[in-house]
Image (cartoon, rainbow, N blue to C red; front, side, top):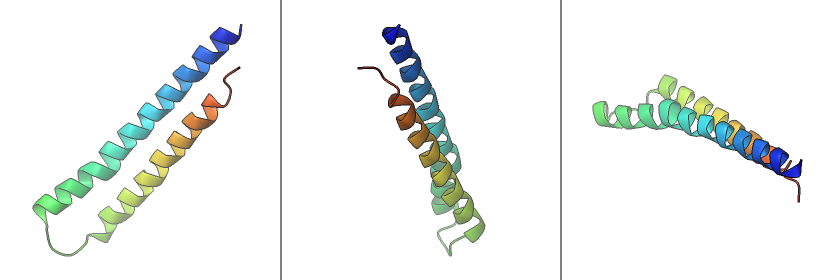
Length: 74
C-alpha cells in the first residue's frame, strides 16, 4: 500500500509543478520578453503587476507540489 501512496504523491507533485512551470512561462516570462523586445522604453506597470502576480501563483503551486511530496512513506 505504501508504494501506491508514494506514486500518487509523486504524480500529484509532478502535476502541480507542471502547472507552476506553465504559469511562469505564460504569465511571467512571455510578457517580459515581449515587452523588452517591442518596447525598450519605460516600464509598463500593468504588465509588471501581472508578471508579479503570476510569479507568486507559480511559486504557490510549486510549494503545493513540495507539500505533496511530504506525504511520501519511508
